[in-house]
Length: 224
Image (cartoon, rainbow, N blue to C red; front, side, top):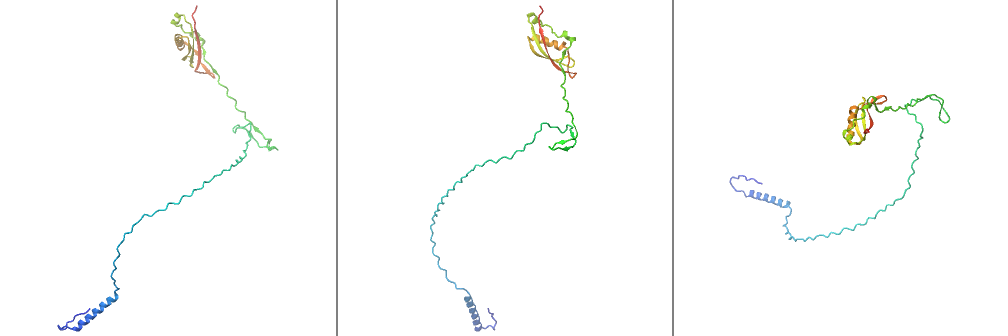
């Protein structure tokens, strides 16, 4: 604010006055510029406020929803569209029958008048094959009757045996099946004789030898 100047070591009362005046002016300016400062008023004591639960009003009653009535009205069925009828012909010519027609003139009724054609005859039916059953070879006719079982002869019993034999293409018996027999002794004697001694003319199919079955019946009878 001010500067002290050396004045030869003497006190200058004028300089002091000037310094005090400058300070007074500065302090006054500060007071003028500063806002008024008022003392703070004391705060009133805080009083607790009691809180009570707030009553919630009940929800308004729901309005009944009116039921929707569904009314059905019978409808008459719609008529079906007419069915197109396709003409059916009694005779149908297959595509590969070989029938060819030349175009001719059209008649009044829509038919073809004139023209030529070639008709192929239907195939002839295939004849059934000719099958011949096996027959007894007359050269071995004496070998058909088997030996009389000894136990049956001693007992004086007679009997009959029926068998089915499978005749091969060479006329020999390949299998024997029992159909009926008066006793096991008669059956065993017949089976053994058929496998060893029986010979047949083989069966044929359109003249070609084939395997075939044949039924044979034999009677065992004691001579008087």
